[in-house]
Length: 225
Image: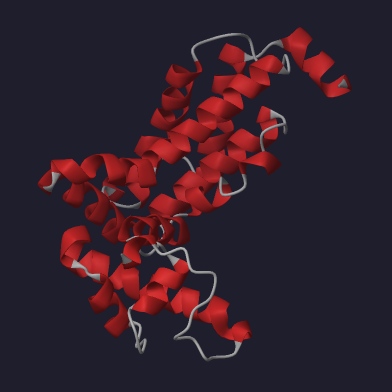
């Protein structure tokens, strides 16, 4: 079955290997347009290959083993917040004063990107129309973000920088404080009228969050570690 191929070579690929990153980007761009126009189920690997002007749909499987993997990659390409957590090991030990604003700005950048509305409609629309796809779609975006943030907060507790608490709840609370600002950048621009700038909002949210969960004594010890 092509969707699970494990070949270590691509017999249909005769192009310069240095062109592979460009082809991957071409596939992702075509996939986004197909998913956005036709939905997850309506878009097929064959239609995406045609849109990307590939000679064979098998080339897509060389980069992405399944349509679900391709969809996750499309979200990662289009959403700055998912790019920000693509390498969690580089963030996990950094202090929350540094990481939380980074995540918040990436979240807002995702909401304010030119494709944000199409991306949101795609994810929410597919989840509402096809409940059996909801788990796949949630795992591709929102759950990845919450899973990383929960693990990050757990690590910060272990380092003594934050006091012990339910990190699943605090991860949701942190994202929740960003949602009105994000909505004002995309679907509900009226919310942005007279509101704070992104920088001011992120600074305030971070300060409130850390004031409630900070461990001042632990933070000092964490800095010396």
